[in-house]
Amino acid sequence: AQSVTQPDIHITVSEGASLELRCNYSYGATPYLFWYVQSPGQGLQLLLKYFSGDTLVQGIKGFEAEFKRSQSSFNLRKPSVHWSDAAEYFCAVMNRDDKIIFGKGTRLHILP
Amino acid sequence: NAGVTQTPKFRVLKTGQSMTLLCAQDMNHEYMYWYRQDPGMGLRLIHYSVGEGTTAKGEVPDGYNVSRLKKQNFLLGLESAAPSQTSVYFCASSYSQGDIQYFGAGTRLSVL
Image (cartoon, rainbow over all chains, first blue to last red; front, side, top):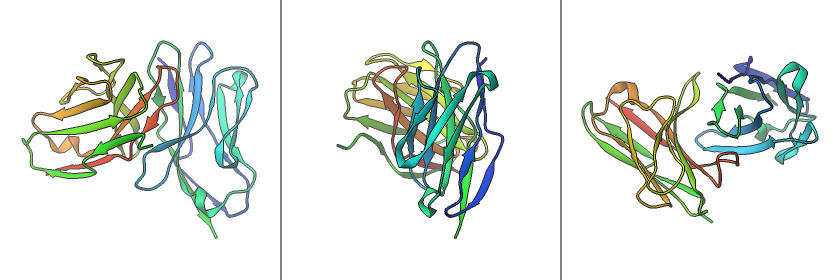
């Protein structure tokens, strides 16, 4: 069965520093991959998605993610975080014939 | 555009009471989903619908029922609420199964 692992429950970075959130998936074929962000008290908002093609995908709010088939990873990156990026981030995987599976989330804290 | 609207936003129930959560979307999406979010568990799919008049079980369907009488609405029912159903419930919709899911703002439910 497919699964998604986000190894880091919490991550703290200083404002202006770079960020990388890890995501590993388990699936036989190439899945659809997503990153969602959830601000406190809000629903989830899509940051970016990978379906096929270029393995480096750009999203909203300056985020990007890279699909690495050999590592079964889809890590999220941002070169310089802002205080407003403090939120919980969810990686998700889905194939064309199945349902979306979410990771357990990584909560990002920003130090001033 | 309203997108995905959930009502109510908050609710407190006593054990054994029943209630219905309403999800409405104005994007003409075929697919609709109900998730629950619990600390450290990420989002888990309760039920989903692939079109008007259809419903299907997700990962954690027990204790819940759903109906999709109209394309724009997806109702989640708790017939006899239990404390284990204390959670935040999210509705989402998508144009197709492989497409981006758009989320509502959530319903926070406490069962005492």
